[in-house]
Amino acid sequence: TEIYTLSLHDALPISLAAILRQVALVTPLDITVLLTGESGTGKSQLARIIHENGPRASQPFIEVNCGALPESLVESELFGALPGPHSTATRRIEGKVTAAEGGTLLLDEVGDLPLTSQAKLLQLLHSKEYSPLGAARPLLADIRVITATNTDLQRAVAERRFREDLFYRLQVLPIRVPTLAERQEDIPELAAFFCAKACQRHSLPQLQLSYNARRAAEFAPWPGNVRQLANAI
Image 1 (tube, helix red, strand yellow):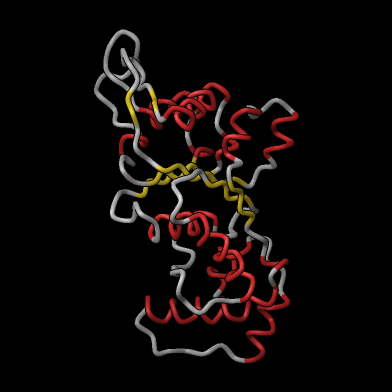
Image 2 (cartoon, one colour; image 1 turned 135 degrees about the vertical axis):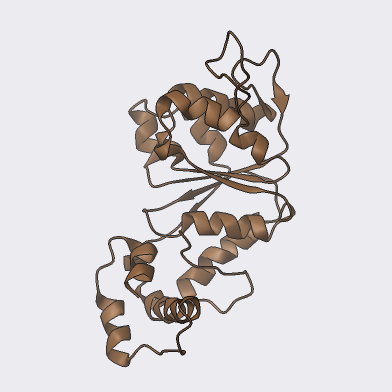
């Protein structure tokens, strides 16, 4: 779902501009980035901004929602599978790592990866190698990995649901995306932006939000954050 589309050069609300200043620092660097924050705050869109403004912009951007993958299919979906006695695949399956070759792989909800897949992800981040199911030897990957989660990974490590070594490997440069409740001053400008986008999408005349509508949006609770605000507008 499209939340919003921004470049690093657009006029931006104050808090969002502060986040994008952090993003601008990491965009040209080929390092792993961890985006944290509640659902609906725009983590996936920030990952796309990093990709589209970085040196891999002309290459694929592949997004995987780790929480939506059945545990039995996680490894084949991510790393691929070859048909044969050591794999349940009846045909060659191209994994998301292969699909992202040369570009960026976004692992959304990375905290939901099962422990066995976490070990393979750690290998990928450490050595840039991965092994499709049934493969006799590992393959080399030329990708940038961005991860996102609304899970408290430190707590998950303490509860042994997330590997500690993988946590530190992901923590190269974490960026926390604040909730709308923490950036209330951004709401009127975001609401106006979404209004303009809606008019464009539905071929409507350029409508303007009234003063009362802007104030109502600014002081309303938005537990679904930016996604909920966009849908409401």
